Image (cartoon, helix red, strand yellow):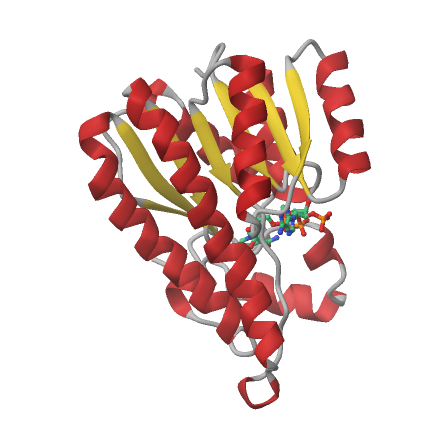
Length: 245
Ligand code: NAP
């Protein structure tokens, strides 16, 4: 599906980014694993290599232009090309609107939206020349339907969905597709921290009655990263158990 393709994944060392990287690696991709935490990224890359995957770790903050340039330089120097970009790095800084600090707004918009923009711009340069690329943005169901206490996060993910469509239109003629995956509520460290009661209330809002897994997200990314999705661009795939339709 993605044999010998080179994939750069941001926020790769844990959570959903880790599952995405493992799924791409299991189907033959070479992985450029980017994360803020160098030690965690190196350890993850060693794990990938021990499973036979060609991989390289890059420490980088997606909000810093110089770091983003470095990520793509390392990718190009190591593997000579970049076929797949997964903009997965993301943060939350939740607060009700009246209590939300300027910093909470700026930090979330910076990582979730500007970070994806910087990485996409760098990737588009290489992919346009290659006349091949797959860019996948990890958005969120709350960017489609909103959520109290998450004005910053919802705005960043709604913006990411709009940017997905804009970039898809710009890059289509270069055979570079740009799509988004919008996860619903997924069992990760973030949702593990919720009480059983809150998790039950969440599950009750989901037609399928249960939270999703990081592997559910990874499988949809794998499809969008593969040659099987060549005629799909500018789309948002909801992986949410039917919570938003
Ligand atoms: P996570 O476990 O917190 O992982 C996020 C990863 O991104 C971490 O490895 C983190 O590094 C890295 N990161 C954060 N800021 C970064 C930056 N500035 N530059 C580079 N890397 C950075 O989150 P997750 O739950 O797997 O979520 C992954 C994506 O899915 C996010 O975009 C999130 O918004 C989206 N999503 C998640 C859910 C869910 O239910 N979990 C639902 C919808 C959408 P450190 O650990 O070193 O900080």
